[in-house]
Image 1 (cartoon, rainbow, N blue to C red):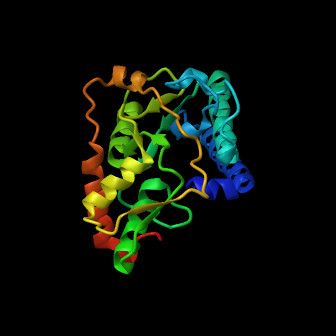
Image 2 (cartoon, rainbow, N blue to C red):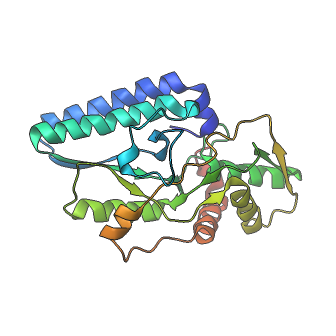
Length: 248
């Protein structure tokens, strides 16, 4: 998988390689009699044209955004595979749909990373070169960001509980924030002084894909999400300390 521009340039590869991954893992689970598992999808699987907030029942209601349809359709197919296996063999394969993940040990490659690691790396390089941080697109697109440590805890809770696997479950904090605001938070945490500029020759991708995490929150009402500013601080601190060794 990759960020927006990686997906746009590699839709065919994303589709074929993820289909193969899905089929191989499901085949191994069947052969070795694995009867319970968590399979991770993405909010990009949801229709491009839909009502908001999107929830688990709307997965197949329309075509996904064309910018990442290869990855999206592969992940939709994984949901179908799991559901059909559950129906035929009585397995408990649950599909989980996180919103945009970020955190330590991420991929910080400037061409393939998701938005937060991409912006952190770009701000780091721009600060060294004493130039503004260039933000691709208008910055108006809205996203929900989930700290990777939170998602790990959510997966642990879901696996430990007897969950209805007949439909997926969305994992997301309620907060929705623009890419512009994320960039401003990053430069604030990094004490970056060179300013922001926009390159509007690049697409914003899907402007909005607000997801409804109420099913998870009803199952685990005590779950506490890491505030975005705290997650960014921890991620940036790790990035700066580990820069020579990170994926980039």
